[in-house]
Image (cartoon, rainbow, N blue to C red; front, top):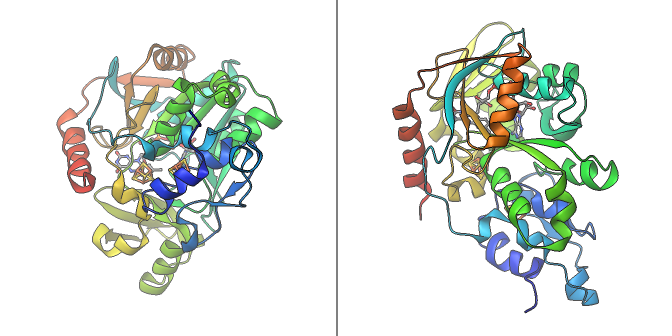
Length: 338
Ligand SMILES: Cc1cc2nc3c(=O)[nH]c(=O)nc-3n(C[C@H](O)[C@H](O)[C@H](O)COP(=O)(O)OP(=O)(O)OC[C@H]3O[C@@H](n4cnc5c(N)ncnc54)[C@H](O)[C@@H]3O)c2cc1C
Ligand code: SF4
Ligand code: SF4
């Protein structure tokens, strides 16, 4: 039977408005025929019109095979796990979002040669514009700690560069739950074109996520309604509201209902808070301020956490508030179920 192609993706996902913007289809298209445009028109990818299978009758279907929006929505809260802890980095990470645990695990893995690189999303600290990047040293990783709440590039864009161009074989990826779902499909799928990706992805770290914002719309809203330019912002945090902390120490709390128009449309179809398909999931809810909640889901995830603890970069403590995580995850499922 012919594999499904970008035309099926278009009718089932793009035109239905459910695309998350994870960028997995863009990354794995062997013809580089899919892309996102910047701004509000870029809520789902566009095609050049060329397709290996549709145009040249060469079997492909890679884009459809990786898309997380072509399967039933996951509806678990914390999901399956081996260990649950509050964690923090044992060294100074100035821009860490929660406890710096994600940076500590990845820095330890890079320093010990357990991975070649990290495919992640960083941002320009002046414009706050995010980019999909490949990081190969722990110093850069530490400089780039922190969460990117807004979007304008496909989150997994750098994955193709890491696998196909640079030919890295031991890749760690950080991603939001939608991107993690796509990575899980890459790992477990049976499409031959995904084999190089599946073989190269060693570790998947998922970040908890309630929603993400369109970069242009959020920047414009903050400028217009809060007289705040991106370069004035030191940190953003989502905790039931968007908390903005400026370099001068002032803060503004924005209720999420005021930011409704900035939320990426695909997020309204997302029911996964805790990155259910990651090796390790990380979030702030459930742990005290200054710590990261770590959900270790697989033996691979456990090996990386153990290595970081052994190297003296990561400290674990018990006592995660699972009720708080369950509550937030259930709210997300109920809001976006239909
Ligand atoms: C859009 C978004 C929404 C979130 N919503 C919640 C929430 O509602 N509740 C909650 O408990 N936690 C949420 N988190 C997770 C939380 O903000 C922290 O990322 C998490 O607690 C890990 O903190 P840390 O200090 O260990 O990470 P750090 O040590 O600061 O490291 C974070 C790592 O993740 C990478 N990264 C940052 N943003 C992205 C991104 N968008 N995509 C891929 N990689 C990225 C960075 O490059 C860095 O390597 C959200 C994160 C994001 C990005
Ligand atoms: S959800 Fe991801 S894989 Fe699916 S169409 Fe959107 S960008 Fe592509
Ligand atoms: S809510 Fe988060 S995980 Fe879900 S689609 Fe939006 S960005 Fe992706």
